[in-house]
Amino acid sequence: MEVDSAKWDSVMQADPGLQERLKRLNPQGYPATIKGDLLCLAVKGKTPLVVSWDGAKISVSRRQAKKPFISWAISQAMFDEVFSAKCPPVLVAMNNDQKNITAGADHHNGSLVVSFMVMLQESRGGGARA
Image 1 (tube, rainbow, N blue to C red):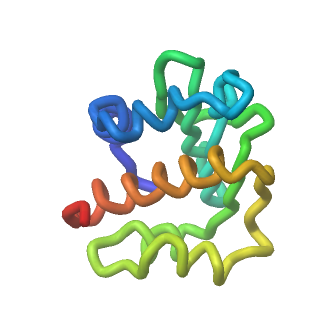
Image 2 (cartoon, rainbow, N blue to C red):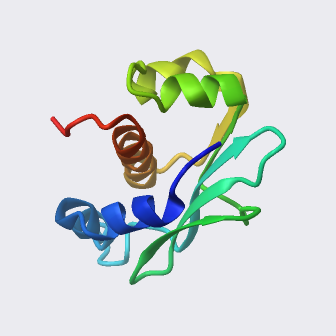
């Protein structure tokens, strides 16, 4: 799983739309984005890639996740296919791999995690954002 996590970290921190979504409040006026690990992308036999939010900053690291909102266990072959230049959309891959995904139910946090995966897909494959 060759991923430049520092590059991905930098790309996500520099995206103003993502930053706005991370800081969004729920209807009761509380933060809508949970603090802690939001995404754990676990390739068998490798240290997982974890995206976390501390309430002020998003970060990407390689470590074991602590109660991630979404955890996706993925094979190296699937990772290489999904996060390559000629990959299918992330959502197609996720829909085909449901048994390997565990997720919380909150729509806001779920859509943020999908955004993280799309950004990784784009940064790995060199695709432009639509």
